[in-house]
Amino acid sequence: MFRGNRGIEIKTDDQLRLMRRAGLVVADLLDAITAEARAGVTLRELDQIGRDTLARHGADSNFLEYGADSRGHGGFKGVVCLSVNEVIVHGMPNDYVLADGDTLSVDGGAIVGGWHGDSARTVQVGTADPTRQRLSDVTEGAMWAGIAAARLNGRIGDVGAAVEAYVENAGPYGIVREYVGHGIGTEMHQPPDVPNYGRPGKGPRISRGLAFCVEPMVTLGSADNQVLDDDWTVVTVDGSPAAHWEHTVTCTPKGVWVLTAPDGGEEMLGRLGVPFGPLAD
View (spheres, rainbow, N blue to C red):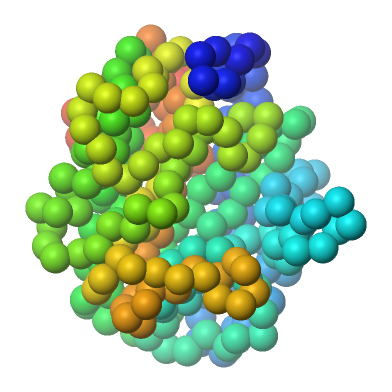
């Protein structure tokens, strides 16, 4: 591992394999939580499922107490962000009881052997409202469009431009600009930023050994947002629901490898006509 231009961390193949282990833990974490996301369950109960899953894998949380100051104050109080309805991101686990028709975004991470994984997905609780389900589908599709635009020696702007174009072509949705994807490795958030908008051919180069997160956040109404008094929870100003999808990815000489997808992204990349690029064990 070394730091390249702009402080970007470049990993060896063996280090990327370790990140894949962390990514598989995150996938299991999200599977376990979303499987129990039903009416009558509290966000605190879902967070406990996340804690139990990390413990079962012997993994550490990269969310718990994130952002705490030197005295241990102000850190995030869960192992996952649980964002309901108008909450875009960073929803704090609490005693809110999920109701039929809620939209829930689950953003989780794990540390295995000092290496980080990070992923998010949005689900509908109980009876899915078609409009909200469409919002989630568009956001997921935009994430995959961004992933599909990534390639060795390409640019981060290629990814953001693909996300933006997908959302704009899908309808009058709002793309959140203040919160973006990011590099990842020995820390959860590293350079470079990976915006959900941009211009092709611009931005940092996608080099071998770079790992980064593609994570569009899309709203049904205006993308204008504000942070609540807890200094974490980000909500839409107009109260419209939001969706959030995220994967950790890297590019190899063979193609794209999605470190937080159980199959490495093989199925979706195949549908999109993008080479699948896992590293051999």
